[in-house]
Amino acid sequence: MILLILGLALFLGTHSLAMALPAWREARRARLGATVWQGVLSPIALLGLVLIVIGYGAARDAPVLLYQPPLWLRHVALLLMVPVFPLLFAAYLPGRLRAALGHPMLAAVKLWAIAHLLANGTLADVLLFGSFLLWAVADRLSFKWRAATPVAGAPLGPWNDFIAVGAGLALYGAFLLVLHRWWIGIAPLG
Image 1 (cartoon, rainbow, N blue to C red):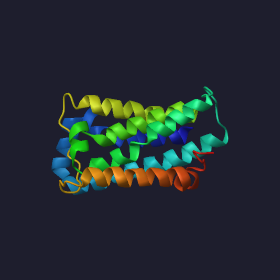
Image 2 (cartoon, rainbow, N blue to C red; image 1 turned 120 degrees about the vertical axis):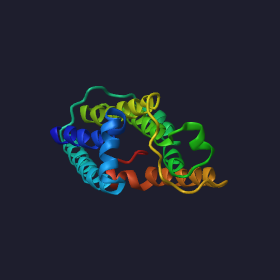
Image 3 (cartoon, helix red, strand yellow; image 1 turned 45 degrees about the vertical axis):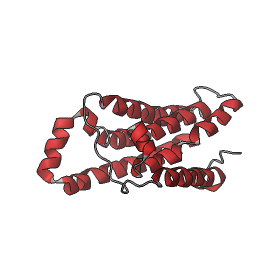
């Protein structure tokens, strides 16, 4: 569990600098340059991600059950996951979806976290998905006092929303049928 917590601290910590210490972050980024700054933060975030994967996997070997979700909540979770991948694509494909939501990736993270909290009730699940949910809510609320960091992506185009939805739904289908079981070890459809 320690590795999971350390991984979450490193990964979410690096992704929280813009909201927690915006002036400090901007000063370092300006002094080092955007590329070097990313070169400093990326290995830390990647290490955090690796520790999350290892820590979560280890915690699944000896799960601590906090609550047992009823079976019907798994169906709700599957429905909540439908827009997640289209929203992820919309974050990088500027169109009406991105304009309407402001930051579709944060919406995707919140839906992903809520869906997984509804379907899973171990301590590791609550730590992992609860941390991401709290981070996404805090990040979205922080836009009330700070400007959003621009997200690089494709140029504005009339087909971007269609591409985001189509590619997102195709990826969701791939996750349901193959990828979730292959990467995570659990088949969402049983």
